[in-house]
Structures are given as structure tokens and as C-alpha cells.
Image (tube, rainbow, N blue to C red; front, top):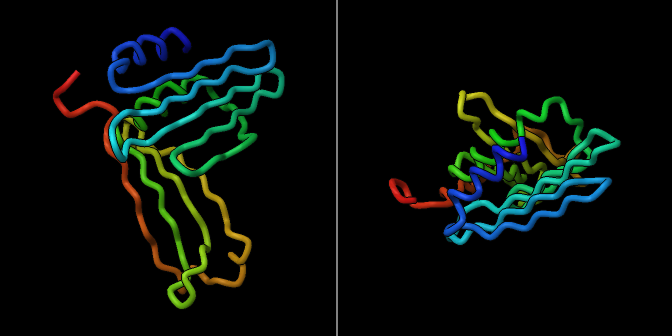
Length: 145
């Protein structure tokens, strides 16, 4: 998995800044794209606990179970290709956030998704909420290297 990610990142080198930290307890990878409106991402894999943290754009999802390491190269490549949307569901009446969802579309059309509920989510019915999407662009220009 690491070799695949490093090969992919070497192709992206002119378009991103990368931080990597590899310790006995965890492996952390942070990608900060140069392109305006491209999605920054940080992945932390915890070795002993078999869990991961993932920061995608403005959202952070912590202590998620690692089901397969094969997901991570595909997930990072999809984010780098701009196939990620952050959806914010807000009350139509008050503007209070009901939930925030991140959806990443993988190369085979399947999706990885996760969600945070706002502190007042129970007070806002799904039917009373409107959705605001934020889509991201690719790390490198289309057709460019």
C-alpha cells in the first residue's frame, strides 16, 4: 500500500505538498494541494488499534475501523481527482446545521461516506433541512501532469 501511495504522490509532486510521519504507533500522511478549491486530506493509521482518522476538507472522522488497507490508495486518489463532495444540511427556518456529510466516489463508482450530526440534529427533521454541497477540483489540471 505504501509503495502505491508513494508512486502516486511522486506523480503529483508539482501540485501538492506532502507531510509524512511514520512511528511505532501510527502512520500519518497529509496532502495539501496547490490548486485553489482542491481538497486537503490527512490520513492517520493506528497500528495496534486497527483504526484510522481521516480529515477530508473541513471535516475530521476519528477512530474509524480499518476494514481493508486496499481502500486507502483508492480513497486518496479519488480525493486527488476531485471526486469528493461535502454536503451541509441546515434547517430551512433557522440555518442551524443538522449534519455534515462527506462523500468520496471511488474509481469503480462505489462511495465512501461519513457524517457528523450537529448538536441540535434531533430538533431538526430531515424534511425541514436543505442541502448545500461543496464540490472540489482535481489536484492537477485536467490533461496536465
